[in-house]
Amino acid sequence: MSTSNTIVVKTKRFFEEVGDMTYFAIRFLKEVFTAPFEWKELIRQCYQMGNRSFLLVSVTGFILGLVFTLQSRPTLLEFGAASWMPSMVSISIVREIGPVIIALICAGRIGSGIGAELGSMKVTEQIDAMEVSGTNPFKYLVVTRILATTLMLPLLIIMGDAIALLGSAIVENLKGEVSYLLYFNKVFDALKFSDVIPATVKSFFFGFAIGLVGCYKGYNCSKGTVGVGEASNAAVVYTSMLLFVIDFIAVFLTDIFYEV
Amino acid sequence: MKEVVLEIKDVYKSFGDNHVLNGFNLKLHKGENLVIMGKSGSGKSVMVKCLVGLMAVDSGSIKIHDFDIVSLGRKELDVLRTEIGFLFQGSALYDSMTVRENLEFPLRRNKDKIKTGQSTDELVLEALENVGLANTIDLMPSELSGGMQRRVALARALILKPKIILYDEPTTGLDPITSKEIIELMRRIQVTYNTSSLIITHDVDCARVISNRMILLIDGINYIEGTFEELSNSEDPKVKAFFKN
Image 1 (cartoon, one colour):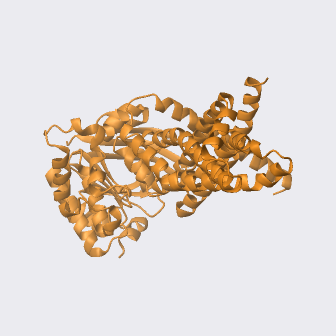
Image 2 (cartoon, rainbow over the protein chains, first blue to last red):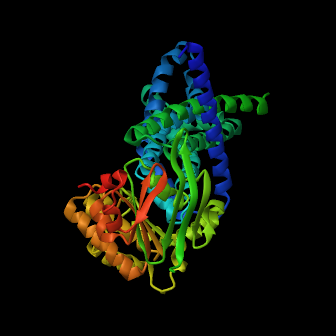
């Protein structure tokens, strides 16, 4: 096959995949508002995703704040701007670094898990078994997981941001002898609603993307155990790319709405 | 003439250029054990999946209790599916749930269908006792042997007290002794629950013991029908190939 033919085939496949995923998202939006609702499974998924990601997000957030402050400190000292550290760190973490890094971590942790779990259920006919028992597997497996990631990711990001700021405060306290009270006073002085709200809103979309891609890849898995691995891997790759696209759109819109 | 509970008429199903079913027909009568035999890849599993709406047919009609499943909506199909038990080839137990939760699962939305007034616990225990595995109720599927998993899957298929049971390769992957136990269990269930069964298999022993009637699925059509004796004594070389051992 010639190079141009390969490009045409791959482009066609890409758009088919985008179309299928859009249809999958539309189906989710239709099913999420129709009874019966799987409350018990939704709560279980929220618990699983929130609780099991807690340690990973905490450690990542703490090291993020710690390293970010350690790396920035010498440069700020050079310009005599060390007192700006809490403002700079808080705005950077809350607006951008926290949501994106934690969403990427969760894409690896949660997205691949969903892809592998649903993929494995698909190839072992467990999803078919649900279907023939008169239960809607899309509602039970997909709707609950996408809702859970959409609801849990903002909470994980808020918690990760808070722990990152704590890490930063520890460095400032040890190296710059800044009290925790002063540090956090400066943090809250610097942060505005225009920093927090867009970041929180986009984190819902990050959560939705992680759930959607993981479920789509797992639910449409084929080719046996090889397919399960592919679904898990593709869930992470596609989600990571999608997260950056969503981030770009979010920053672009924020810039329009909060333009001074 | 016995009542027809399931009827397939001129069903066609293709995957691209691969024509799997080419005008397949069958009738399943009340209380009957109908065995469908065919080579691997002959479309037996595709046919049984079309029967419960897991796959859409290209053309033709599938009637279960006079409802054409091809034209049914999602809700009506879900209601009709509670009348059908399905034993999957690989058991398909939900591996993140215990045996109890596996059996409770079909009851979550359909318990009102059972008019006996039994509680969920009683129904689960009864189904497990029927397959001789009441002691495994709190185990995970991974803690069970292949034969036990198949029996639990059978208990799950029976929990809504269906009128029709579809068996997709019930003895595949099991040793001869366990296979015999499963076949015996299927016979017992047919008597206890008065069900009609459609059994997809390429296990001649299974077909011999359990079938009232058989269909050979070759080239996507019902090539020949008859009792086990009629088919096993056939002089047709394609039919003989199935029974030569």
